[in-house]
Length: 439
Ligand SMILES: NC(=O)c1ccc[n+]([C@@H]2O[C@H](COP(=O)([O-])OP(=O)(O)OC[C@H]3O[C@@H](n4cnc5c(N)ncnc54)[C@H](O)[C@@H]3O)[C@@H](O)[C@H]2O)c1
Image (spheres, rainbow, N blue to C red):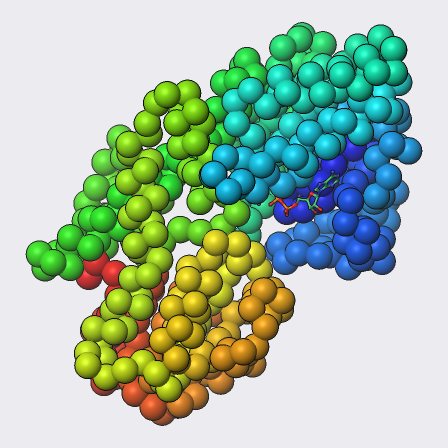
């Protein structure tokens, strides 16, 4: 089976490598020439566990190729996936310019039947726009070529992307013809041999499913953060509460961790986009509007706690160590990360930052430069002379540091743990002032 994946980012590259690993011939396409040149040289542009090996293996086998020229390879494909970015527009709606650009190129060059599948997260009605755009180009060319559109939202998680893709809980596919359904069933069969769970549905429902899933997860996080903040006020421990409610099978254990807010390329933009879709349709998503407000407050909560620790003392001239910059562990992705909010607040307050992250240092430097930020070689280097340490991302290597080394290196023994990974008693016994979330 020949497949093209247009947009070679987190989703496109992982999908391409995984489809190739099942024996399909995959061409990954991107407009970013630098990115494609890197990939052709064997350099993987993102950090994702296992991806490097998987890409190299399939390139070597001749099943995974890269190009910037969609037109030249289009008519060799049976399926074309669009996995380009859908960043938020100024008004919060998903910006569909890249998705429609891809549709236009397809319409300009299509010469045979194929299924055009949108994998990007897109609002309800996008498949209709993709179909109309392709058709418009075909009409301009005065050719009559059959094609199908489909929606196949992606649920992989960065940091665990290959496993999620290779053994998904489910695959959601929206189709409008049995021909497209058959082709996509064939494509996904290798992934689901043991437990075949492709859920076929109409296209609007598939498009909506992705937003509903991410909104639900974001809601759980903001809900727990709200509970955590109240726990602090009334003397309860949010970890105990989490265990107490998570053991109820109707609630479940996952996504109930209080912390310093959610970020990443998906939750913030998808919650915004669904709110906007609702507003455009004369409906107000009250729960999700509150989810956003709680999250915005939570992203600044470590700064609020830091100010409380220092009371009347100014943060100007203080050195603050940050452990973790990426929006979550096992990725170098800093899109909408809490670190960006914290760095901004700290720099405005006149503090100097000593930062360390196992994967996101290059990305942070690319985004923010080094004005006011010292990039450190490891977690102990980061706390040298620090007036406080803020834990922002729960990377595994931060879980069991030597508190003796940390304590000796710091100027003031203050730790604010944004992910509740440290033991309050242990730290207090070691002479630290320790704050966390909801305990
Ligand atoms: N990152 C995730 O964890 C994740 C998970 C599920 C769904 N999604 C969704 O998948 C989509 C892609 O996300 P991502 O994180 O992979 O984005 P990304 O920004 O990492 O990658 C998008 C790529 O598309 C390329 N592109 C843009 N216009 C193009 C065009 N006309 N032709 C070819 N390439 C083009 C860009 O150069 C870029 O490399 C988004 O809609 C996102 O919401 C992302």
